[in-house]
Structures are given as structure tokens and as C-alpha cells.
Length: 252
Ligand SMILES: NC(=O)c1ccc[n+]([C@@H]2O[C@H](COP(=O)([O-])OP(=O)(O)OC[C@H]3O[C@@H](n4cnc5c(N)ncnc54)[C@H](O)[C@@H]3O)[C@@H](O)[C@H]2O)c1
Image (cartoon, rainbow, N blue to C red; front, side):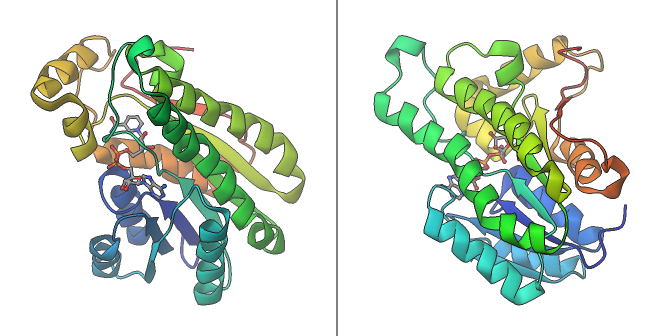
């Protein structure tokens, strides 16, 4: 896949899956704008090590002004926005508990970042994508939304909202040649997963694998190919879809 001179914005790119997307887009020739609440300096170094150009931004995806500043900075630097990967989310920092024990403040924060944040970022990049006569938006959901994850209803609901946003938006922006798709991974071996599960991490990963058709642990690199495919012209008439990367757990 060739993303030479394509401009991609990746949110939540300071570490984990977002950082891996940044590395791989850079490897495939894109200019990469890495955004996060946390510093993306390390990600920028990775982008440059891959021989690509990049930009590291401090962005709060829940804020309209911050996301518009993000889009303006990307356009100023690279004169276009072709691809947006909405990866930022509350995940590692969340408390997973029975639904009636979840804190209301955490429910609101989860919906705010994981669902509203995507809306804000999509609004921010729309003018540039329209100007460029097309674009690709990839929203990161989770298998939790499809499989139904117990003891994480705030996260599950927020990730189901991502699928709804994808479908509604795909129909609205198709006339501008902008495609919107979702990638829904199962549990991936990331720092955030270790934070969520603590010393139960290996047990959870093993239980997850036992339900997969292909019984291998999901690593960060295993998710990237589907994101790149949906960002590329190889999928130019695919929109509004959700692709699960789960080793064959939920089969539709
Ligand atoms: N790791 C998994 O098992 C798994 C499985 C399915 C889906 N996902 C999804 O993949 C994505 C990345 O997962 P990860 O494991 O790398 O998690 P992660 O917690 O390392 O990454 C999320 C990033 O989002 C950033 N972020 C949080 N709030 C933000 C805000 N308001 N504005 C900007 N950035 C903000 C965080 O700082 C963090 O860097 C998330 O959307 C997650 O829900 C992960």
C-alpha cells in the first residue's frame, strides 16, 4: 500500500495502537500527524526514523476548539487532510465493574471521549476533506460492542456508539467521496490492556484466545493492516462497515 504524500491524522497516538498506526503509515510513505492529550514526541521520533514527515500535537478530542486547532495545524503544515484515524479513547484508565457499580462521572467521561470525541474530530477535518474531494475516516471501536462485554457497560456502550456514528456519517458524507469505516479489535496486547487487567492479564488473554478460530494472541501489528486497507483506495467503495479483527471470534 502506498500512502506517499497522503496526510493522516491519528488521535490517541502517544503510545499503544495509535503509535503503531503512526509507525506503519509513516513506513508506507504518509505524512503523519500524531495527536494526544499526552506527549507524542516519542511517536514523532518513530515517524522520522521511518523516513517520513510528521507533526506531534497536544489535542483534546472532546474539545471543538482543540480539534479545530488540530485540523488547522495539519492543513497549515501539509496543505491537506486525507485520512483520520479516530483511535483516542478512555480504556486503560477505566474501572471495569458491574453496571450498577459504575460511577456516573466515569460513564459520562467515557461517552465524552470515546463517542463525542469522534464527532468533534470528524467535524474538524470535514472542510479539508471536502476541499481535497475525498477522504477516509477510520473509527476504532471494540469487539466489546459486538460481543457484549460484561462489567464494562460504559466502555461497551461508547464503542457501540462508534459503530452508529460510522453508519450515520457514512451516509451523510458519501456525496463528498468521504468514506467512514470502523475497526473493532478484540483484546490486544498493549500497555492499556495490562493496566485494565493487572495480574489477570495473561488469564484474560488466554481465555480470549480460546474462543478464536485462530488461537494466537492479538498484537498491535495485527490490527494495522485492516486500518491501512480501509484508509487506502483498495477499499474505495467500502463505507459504513465494521471489520472485526478478532482471530475469528464473532463470525457474521
Ligand atoms: N488494547 C485493546 O485490547 C483494545 C481492544 C479493542 C479496542 N481498543 C481500542 O483501541 C484504541 C487504542 O487502544 P490502546 O490499547 O492503545 O489504549 P491506550 O489507552 O494506550 O490509547 C488511548 C490513547 O487515547 C488518549 N486519549 C485519551 N483521552 C484523550 C482525549 N480526550 N484526547 C486525546 N487523546 C486522548 C490516551 O492518552 C491514549 O494515548 C482505543 O480506542 C481502544 O478503545 C483497544
